[in-house]
Image (cartoon, helix red, strand yellow):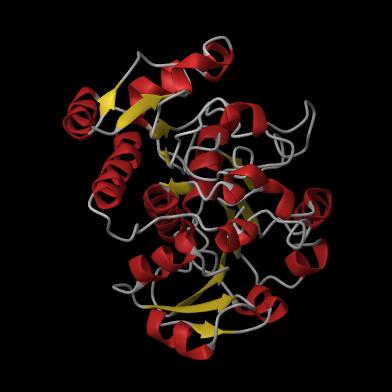
Length: 332
């Protein structure tokens, strides 16, 4: 029978690999030892000697030369989380080890969170909620500032896994969706019900701008102050991607001058922001502590995706969420 091992953070393990999921895995694979953390496994490399598959998640070990030399039989690595950038090394591809990630499962709650913020922002909800709390009383509603979710334009930056799902979730609503993604052609965009445009056009035309680009060398600082200056009156910017994609100091300068604009930031750079940052105090910025991704029971979906991948692997079927060498170079 195939031999496997869990290696990841203890707290994350309990949230991700629920008992029922571990039972499913135990029916398919012989788990040869209790959970190992990346620190513990360094002192027990002998446990890797005859392991075929590894189940992991947040707190995963780095699959470097030392680790892989201790695991000569390793054939597949199932990662019940998102990006594997800090984990996978060149040796993994040289050994032709299969890597599968639950990034698609993690895209689901991010897209759901984004949808909630788009609809709430079209009611200018955060501005009124914060003002009422600060002033301890209701304030006059400015109907010109409350756009409403009808015939408004939503701009999506990057049509990757999350961006595509956001587009799909927006389809039942009476909204127009435009998108910027230099790697998507018009036919793909049409299938998603969106119209492609330049980044500058997206910022100048959208009532809501939602960022979903990966953090790569080519996207770092992609969004600058000039983009925010183009935004329509009372428009909102939402970031559930990565803070480093935005030149935050330039964004802050524009938001200081343009009090009509609003920013909802689930991610920042650095994260959390430096003490004393204006991100904490500007009245037209809302910060949430990176909660858009999988939290609570949502984490179990990550492991469920990996169990399904394990079944495909054992049956000799193509994996749905395999991270190939080519895909790895394009992912955040």
